[in-house]
Length: 191
Length: 279
Image (cartoon, rainbow over all chains, first blue to last red; front, side, top):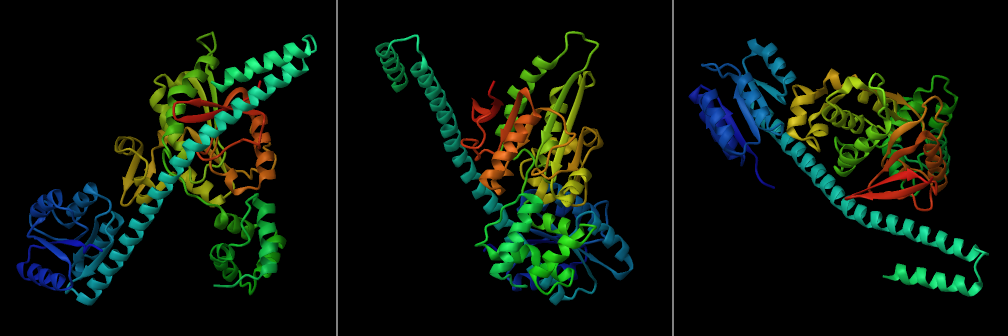
């Protein structure tokens, strides 16, 4: 399976570097942004699976705004908020707005890797469900065409049988005339 | 997971059929176990027989409702399989409006549409969105859009009109999503202007359709597939009784009424089939 691409957004160069190194060591593709503006640019250009963003950053694009931008691009992008203990309320607010989780500083890497592994699993399940529903719809539309044809042809045959019965029952006509009429009817429908 | 014995399988399958009409294949015991196991443990039942006895004797019918919620399938999409909705928009509704519009402009045009197994509501909301977009002079109409389902949970979710991102992503074009839903976090809620057009209620299709009246269009898609042949015959016979003489029936795209209800004749329009009553 393709490794996830993770975007790390933090204005602190030490944390940024540390996250980049540890995540790469775990085998993830890592992109870094030093503020919300860079993050916005990268989100627009690249396919990103997970955004790991600091909540408080200088400028008007903070963690909550990065979350909004990512979710607008695709609701499949998962966002994990990194926060100081003092701003946990804001982190909870972020989860209400669609962030998948939050981590408190200082970052516990075991905890981070565990959450990323869960996201990987979840995305694999979602992918599988999407594949299945795609397969179901393909099968369904192919079957639908066959069934529709059969349904219509069956109705036509039923109509034909009704016509045949009506001719056979028609006592105004001689037996020979009925046979002629039936043969003409059948010849017409054989076309 | 609590294991089900062959005797219990028979008993429970019969019970499920009695309360819902749903026919579960007894060779698929895992289906019973995965869907009913947690209900059994929740009510401290050591066996499925015990669960069955409790469900039958309990006056509040809470367990019965839980069982129905657990065994009914709620797979549905907004605009699932586009063709019936295109059919509705381009053929059935225009024809019906022509036929129903009264001569006097002072009178309103009545339209009644029923989604007979509405599940979590996506089909009926899709119909409501089409009508809203089609009829610019909507106040000249009296439109009744009714959705029914056997599952309390499905009816409740349909009435809320709130969906998670997986339920939304599939089938709904972006412009309709923006126009008719409000997003909060990972969930979307249908706007009041659409919700006000529809009503949902609980109905077991195996029981008489009391008080529903006659409909101009009935959607009964992908529900009869869970019924036995005899139950399907009964169902579509009752549906024929509930359909206006010039009304339309739409069934699932892989379903057929051949050998099930001779009162309906199939008609083709482009890539879809609809049914009308045999005159």
